[in-house]
Image 1 (cartoon, rainbow, N blue to C red):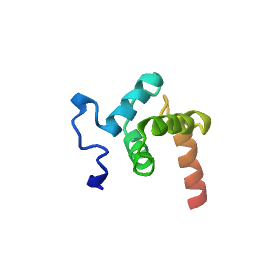
Image 2: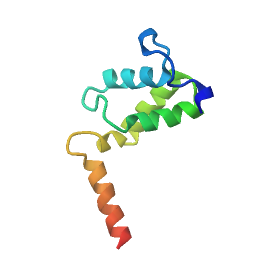
Image 3: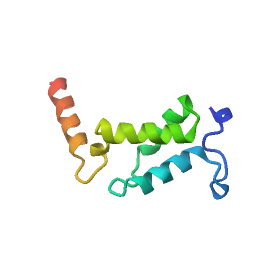
Image 4: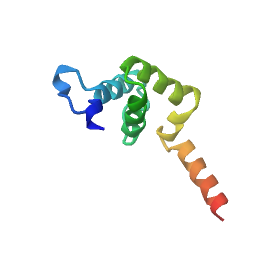
Length: 91
């Protein structure tokens, strides 16, 4: 995976794709900004789509149009409902 060169570069010169997408999203969505776990989603997207801009707009679509940002907003409403559904199905 290191040969994909997605996150091993120096962030000070702007050539770290993962850092760039996450920073751009944090600036784009002030309510969510950056929270732990977003890096896993963006990294997976970068593995399949190496274009930073395409990954950024795909991530925006996922977060806003598919309501995944509710997993990361204050009080985590979607995360709580997903956990409740999981518990119900587990029983």
